[in-house]
Length: 397
Image (cartoon, rainbow, N blue to C red; front, side):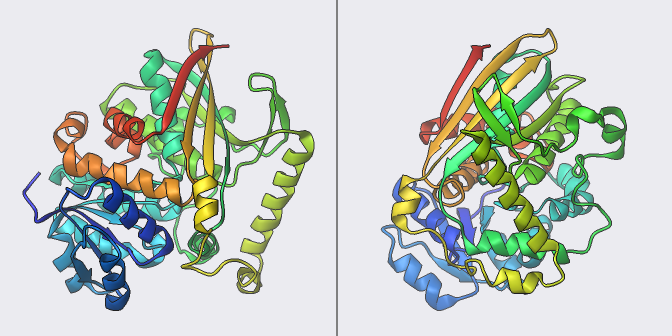
């Protein structure tokens, strides 16, 4: 990687999660070369002055190619927290590509990621650039969790079921992204189980095991109930893209690998309430009067208070069936509100993988529009363990 003035520039540093990313770097990595960027000079100055590190600030509007180019060429990695990403990050990604700068973000907007793959994947492979979306709670626990299962078992996997739960608040930015997806124009269908995969991979791997599941079930292996998980429509697609990228360039998960995920619920009643709530939210988003429903939720720039963020946590349980018929259980656990405090940690550690450990990750990849598992892999697992993310297993069932 070429030498740059900065290791990381946090773009969107004045947003709710952006501020948390600034706080995370300031508290844990004040020795690296970093800066912050966004469109509001006054807010950026206030944020910089509130830190111990006093990072430099740069002004760049999301629609101003010149100012974005001036920023991205200064750094090894752009960590973008400026969502909705399909609305505010198109030119940012383009300028990263044009200036040979690596890029990570926290999007869950897979229909937009699909278009990034079409536009930039081959060129990034040729240029050795890493563009890695979905480096937050969407979709690291699912993606790196599945990777860890395979890494520890070191044998072909037939199927993984992920069961997620957590405690935390809701940010206006996340709600805004969900409602914004309704208006995003693409030739792809957001509900396709293999949205992020090639036609050839879909032809060989599309089967009943990979279809989205919405029923409530008692799961004996975890002694809990399953319910639909709001982020499964994003996370499952990311894991399936990882499976293809690893099959093409690394160690395959297995020729018959499949993945699904759910929300873990303590009782049938809880599972039913989750299912009904998710259904209601979906109807609001697709409704002709969705703009009116949007006003019922938190506005962008707002989110849970510090107490809620600090008391939050996430847990992911993975039940793995290997091709030999053995079953194992794995667990991933992190403290801090999953969508915000934990997400800030996850994207920063992902960015640092590229900025500080590039030689390690480049051994397994030449670049591309990648996933955290295919692009950062074991290097990210090590960083997350050092950042107090707990990995447990395998435990044979």
